[in-house]
Image (cartoon, rainbow, N blue to C red; front, side, top):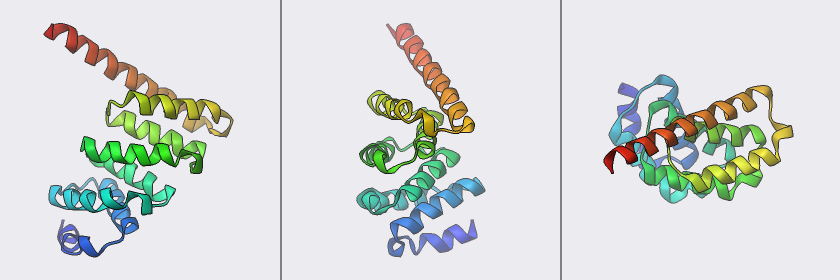
Length: 155
C-alpha cells in the first residue's frame, strides 16, 4: 500500500508501458487502490495504441486479477485487441479471451471475432491454451444462461 501511495503521486509522469506493469503488479499482489486505477486507466485510455502486444496482455490479466470491471475502459481495450489481433499469437488471443470471460464482460461481437480467430489458429494453441478457451466458453455460456433467466423473471 505504501508503494502504491508513492506511485500514485507519479502516475502522470509514467509511460503507458509502466502503467500496464503497475496494473499487472497490483493484480499479482492482489492489491487494489481505486484512485490509482482510475488515474491509470484515464491516462491509458488516451494512449492504448502506444502499448505493445505483451503490455496489452499484461494489462488485461492485471485487470482480471484485481477484478477491475470499468466497462468503458475494458471495451476500449477490447477494441485495441481486436484491431491488433493479427500481431498476437494464438496463446495471447487465448489469454485475452479467457481474461474477458473471467470478468464476465458481455461483448458478443468481440467474443465471436476472437473465437473465429482462435478457430483459425487452433494449430498454434497449446493444450493449456485450448483448455483455457474451452473453460472460458463454458463461463460465457453460464453467464448468458444466467442473464436470460434473470430477464425472463423480470418479464
